[in-house]
Length: 314
Image 1 (tube, one colour):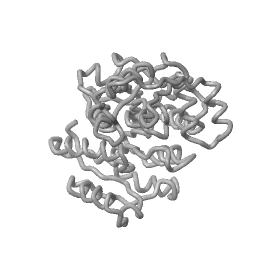
Image 2 (image 1 turned 30 degrees about the vertical axis):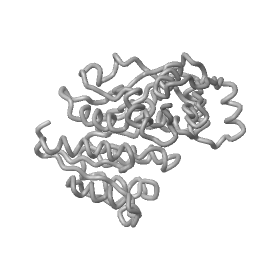
Image 3 (image 1 turned 60 degrees about the horizontal axis):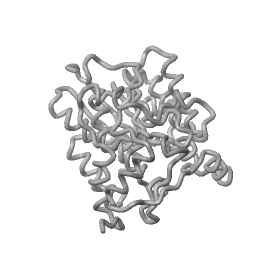
Image 4 (image 1 turned 135 degrees about the vertical axis):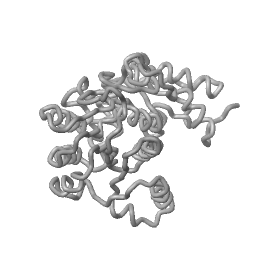
């Protein structure tokens, strides 16, 4: 991509930082690319040591820091902010609550941004459809409908599956190392696609700069696609002992959600237990088709779980 372009990344959380680091590496060898990140004013002014370290890193990477609040600002205000950028990449997650993703998309279109990568770094919302247990997914489909209905702004949706780290998040409950237990969501034969954040950042940048240009497409990537049986077997191998296996059925998880209907974790458990739109073959992914190396689930486990506290190798 030889022409100049200015890129704005929304958010600098786990994924945002991964995208920004990959963009900074690419821009160092690509003339005419300028980078900026939108951060809340409270983040820019934070005295938190971790925040200050991230901000120092962003400045060292020559990334412009743009103050803005996606949840608090109006659509018109965001559009005015977006207008000077050629590409906007949303790495905000769902933390802003309902309506924020749609507001961002409308602001991008109102600003006539040339290209938009919306926050869709997750499951295949088209397959899952409307009315799923995770009600925030309906808004993801609203964003897709909005983008598909217009022809001025190019869009690219990068579909990644679950963040690999989330599969091992204790609160999610699939892998419970403290209890020496692996839970299957729905069935031991159910599969889930996972990709680590650093790979998502790297692959998103490769997709952004790919030739021929990728536009108005849903692009699938994956670090790994595994069944819950394979997860349990991998944990067995890592620990050198057999973990307890417990299957959580869809009716059980639906009942638990009914008891706590606002629980985002319980919503996600039901969606993944139902098994639709949460996994895809590695062969169909951008990284496999381009021959790009990615971090598998077992590799992630070796690099992250073996060094964490509480994991016994006895």
